[in-house]
Picture 1 (cartoon, each protein chain N blue to C red):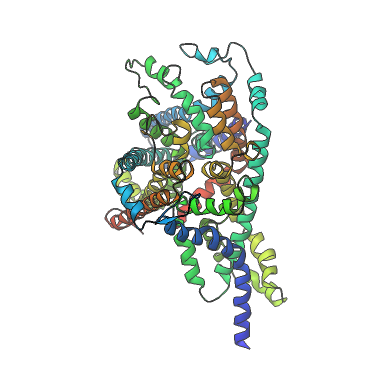
Picture 2 (cartoon, rainbow over the protein chains, first blue to last red; picture 1 turned 180 degrees about the horizontal axis):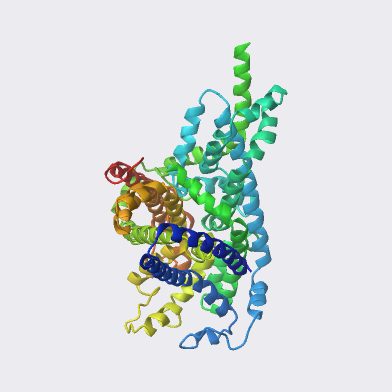
Amino acid sequence: MGVLYMIKRTTLIKSNSSFSESIKSKKAFGNGYRVRRLKVSRLVLFVIMCVVALVMLVPFFWSFLTSLKTVGEVFDYPPKWIPKSIHWENYSQVWKVVPFSRYLINSTIVSGIVTILTLLTASLAAYAFARLKFRGRDFIFMLYLGTMMIPSQVTMIPNFILIKLFGWTDTYAGLILPNVFTALGVFLLRQFFMTIPKEYEDAAKIDGASRFHIYLHVILPLSIPALSTLAVFTFVFQWNNLIWPLIVVNRESMKTLTLGLASFQGMYSTNWSLLMAAAVMGIIPSFVIFVLGQKYLIKGVTLSGIKG
Amino acid sequence: MKITIRKREALSAWAFMMPSLVGFVIFVFGATIISLLISFLDWDMLTPAKFVGLGNYLKLLKSDSFYLVLRNTVFFVIGTVPMRVIFSLLLALALVKNITGRTFFRSAIFLPVAASTVAVAMIWRWIFNADFGLLNDFLYRIGISHLPQWLINPNWALVALIIFSVWKDVGFSAVLFMAGLEGIPQELYEAGDIDGASSWTKFWKITLPLLSPTTFFVVVVNVISSFQVFDQAYVLTGGGPGNATTTIVYYIYNYAFQRFKMGYASAAAWILFAIIFVVTIIQFKHQKRWVYYI
């Protein structure tokens, strides 16, 4: 589905770009020799990129094809691409032996709530950092920034002890809360809020609106691009998080998708067709998020580059 | 009058800060300080903690297993970072051109970045399978007779981890490079054209120097994240064979959450922090020699 969507988009772009290219090449290069050389190098580049795309995508196709084979067919030598017969039951088999839907629900709840809480707390703090004056503001902001240098492994152990102390192992609270507070979100939003002209707020101020009203009705609506970028980024990062669920979850019913996949691999270490069926199901949600949020993900990567 | 207005502003500022600040004080600032304190203790969470001063650090620095883990991690960093930087730069150079299918190629390269490491590492574990895996079948077909025993041989296992990590995250750096390339003013290339500069000269004299702030950022980010490698080692190799692919974070995980040696593991985490800190500082100091800011 996603591939189709991409191909549709590419053909659109293609027809566009070849048009502008033909104009460009006419303008810039008068003589036919250079145009031909340009065309050849374009073709070479295209072929190279096709090989690269193949290397990037083959693992996905290969896992899908393997997931449709029988347990025995997987060990045919040399490996064959196309399964002799299609065995969708591998998927239902995975579904039967582990609570896969439970994993999906847990991952959605955990990533969703982490994202909402991150956006909420980070945007509130970012507004204070960007617009309000208070004693110690710059010092606290430097402290926040400083924490970006600390690897998460440093805080992991005390946070685990804390969660255990609260009796929050195997709970959503334990999975969610320690992952909400990251300086990157506050930093990105603060930088974005600073670029919003103060004039937008003045009208509301004259009307006697409260600061919270301005934050909610002026700043947040103007920051939707930055907020969506942070949201997609946080969601994907949380969805893929392995080590924290690994530490705080023991019960099958509280496992997230990544943890469920990892422990499934532990149980069926050489049953490749089942393992690949599980991996494919693990990738489909990421695939959907990727297609929906690719724009924001890519923007998020470049935005995080600003801090350098 | 003026004072009360300022006071009210400060008051509402603290109200805005509160949700974030409470979380940070508990889970970030507090946890950091507590982690440092724990690193001076001998504590298994069952029996009372014992203060051992720098004992954990000394024990770590004397331990052969910690050196092995350090060596593994440094090899991983040295193997991963240059390949990721070079490949992602080449990909970005190709993708900023208006080649056919550009959007598709960009998506193909970025897809593994978005996919969960656990799921794709499961796939690569199958691809790396020495007897029935796709990779060795390919190598056999192109005429290589001594096929590597990827995940079984201690040396090849680390190489497999590196190959996987380059494949997985090359798209992340490529996107950064693309943004950097798009930021280079077009006029400079036009000026180069007028002076009759070849594409080669333009690349070395215009593209690379003006891209150097991005390159610097890409290198720093990749070094930091590579030192913290864990997920792929956990799924692909389980840290084995033996301890051949046990990384620092894996070691911390093992000691803290398998053996419950909280003090020892915390000390290892602080040594990791120190290493990352020093390496990053060195890079910042060194950047004057090769990074040009306009």
